[in-house]
Image (cartoon, rainbow, N blue to C red; front, side, top):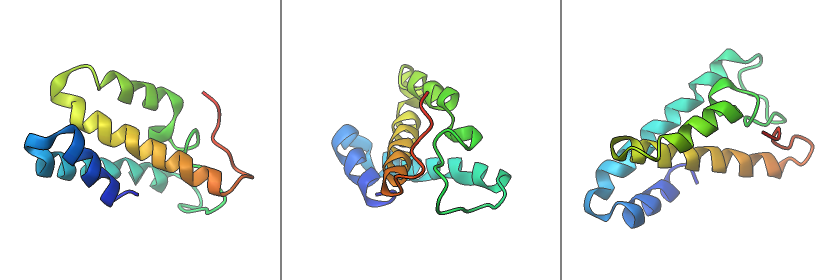
Length: 101
């Protein structure tokens, strides 16, 4: 989901510049660097949404605001899709559902 789905989204949403859009969307995975602030860094039972700073409700709201200006639209789509896939990951482990915003 984190690798191939952004390629499909880029191809559909940004057909004239889909390769550039795909690379930018892949770069938005750097948002996961906030996992380095947690102890332990990786916990398979922890939901990222609402726990890590760049996965917070405030940050996600900011990502939606980034959809408005055209220059930041590709980044916003990549970040929002990343948050969506992380939310789906949370539902695989029903004991750790995302924190409601």
